[in-house]
Length: 122
Image 1 (tube, rainbow, N blue to C red):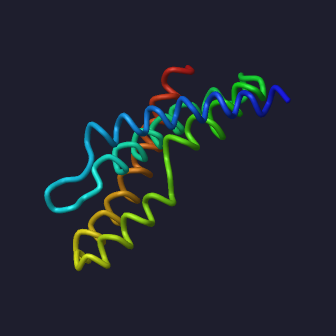
Image 2 (image 1 turned 135 degrees about the horizontal axis):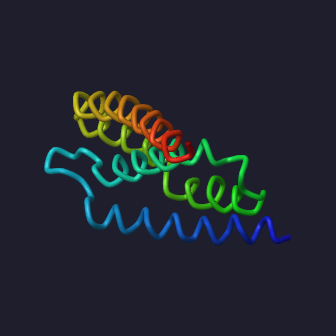
C-alpha cells in the first residue's frame, strides 16, 4: 500500500509543478506549446541526472520519482494533442518544428543530465 502512496504523492507534486510551468509559459504567439515543451525537457533532464543514483534508492523513492513525479511532470499525451491541434489549426510547420525540437532537446537533456549525474556520482 505504501508503494501506491509514494506514487500518488510524487504524482501530485509533479502535476502541480507541470501546471505552474504551463501557467508561466503557456504558448507562444505562433501557437508553440512552450509550457509542455519546458515541462518535458525539464523532466528528461531530471531523469537523466538521476540514472547514476538509481540503484542507491529504495523502491518507494523510485516510485515517487519515476512513476509519480516525473510521470506527472512530463506527458506524451499532451505532446501528441499539441501536435494534432497545431496540424488541425493549419500550423503544420509549427507542429513539425515542435515535434523535432522536442525529440532532439529532450533526448539531449536526458543525456546531459546523465553526464552531469555521472560527474556528481564520481
